Image (cartoon, rainbow, N blue to C red; front, side, top):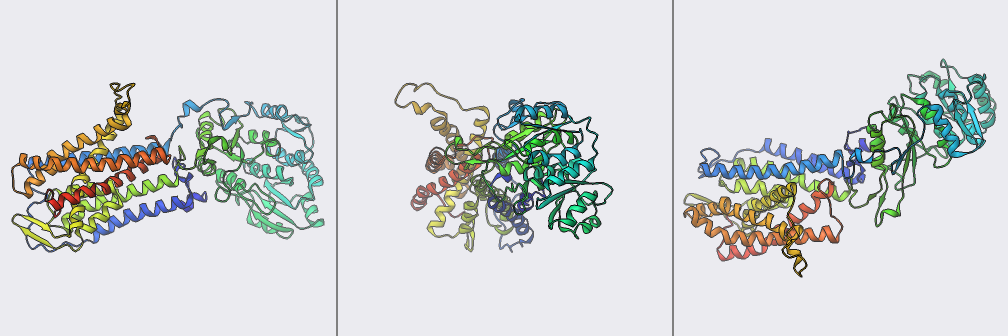
Length: 628
């Protein structure tokens, strides 16, 4: 998928920011996504059921009211996390930071300007005002303009579309004039006189490189072209029309005179991109997003349904900030062109003023190219920070999303594989392990395998226990508290982010002002304290009561201090890591940016590793069990 999208043969609407990331990162992301999804499905289908020596103490059926409530909290927590991640994904992919079209729309935008002129004739007049060189008047015919644009370029003239209305010369005479002046060019562009929209992208290239444009009518070689090819040196001939307009038999006739290349695509938008991307020796723009990065490129944007506007703007192919012609639809930027501009948009590493910068000029009235399409092109060409991409996806962002999707599919796998392959596991592990894998991603899967793989099972009264070495017990005990606890922390953070974090002014103008800041104390309070309470009351407390065969409140009292120690240590690891990567490494990101997921998931994993330390000593002291 990454390969085909990269090469312009696949367009995924509104996923252009994804393909703005480095190609290698995009490919790795799709591989990880596909492998995670496929591996989950294959594992669940092929997993055989273990023979049970005895029935487990608890089963999925016959749950009491309290345990249904526990399931409900876990499902709600996972739903909040997944909904928030989905919101980030959709918002970043479809819009991204600053992509509100309403706020960008204007006659002149930062990266995309509209050439004055509601008609092709007025656009032609604007060309004279912009370039102020000697005019070359041509009839109001896109094919005639395509033929004469290289002539005007060679003479340093400004082509004025529609000003040569009284010119009685026919098209053959214009072609003769062009061939006479430009006959020494090693390249010749052949176009069909029908459907001029296909001819104009090639005409822009020919105008800049001073190559003659020869239109063909009725599928026969014009006499002037035949005379040139018979009497001169062998040429490279570029046919800029699909087979529907100029047949393969016609190309075979041309091959007797030189090297013939059909450079055309039936899809008119890919056709324009083909001429923008390609280069043959010393001929062609060569603006290939896979080969050239961060250049000062310029483009002309027009609608193929109104080729007169593109013809009137032909002077922009060879004067001033010249560039190739790209096509778009009226209401919105075409998906292929949108993806191309996102891939080509420049990055800055230190300062946005470093550039480079890109520019596009729109030709056509709003009924031809809407302001919405102009605004989308303006966003696509915006210079972006290398590490964040702002509205796009960076390799760093795709690393976080890869981590997330491994955890997402791994959580689904654990949810269904535990009853099937670990029938001796009890009620609570079947909840906190999927949650832990969802939050910790690959680390959660690794922890699962390390705690369960080839571990013998012992029956202790009504409870089945897994025999593990001390370090594996500590790992399992850490997952017990942090699996659901960290999930609750993230869910509470998302809820408060949605409604807004408070700002306490109690400590204003004091040395401990930071105690009232949302990103420090307030964030910690709204994430950690509710997670400790919920985890103690509904998870660790009743689980300890079951394991030690005591009453519910006695289990809660036993669980409360160990949950506090686990969650506080995990939160310290999480918050310190988040502070470092966001403030010192520059990964600070808004909730509508792709990068949002990366610091959050890395910080959660850091919290797990820090929480291992106190949990090891709690297991050693007998405060916590690590055999579930």
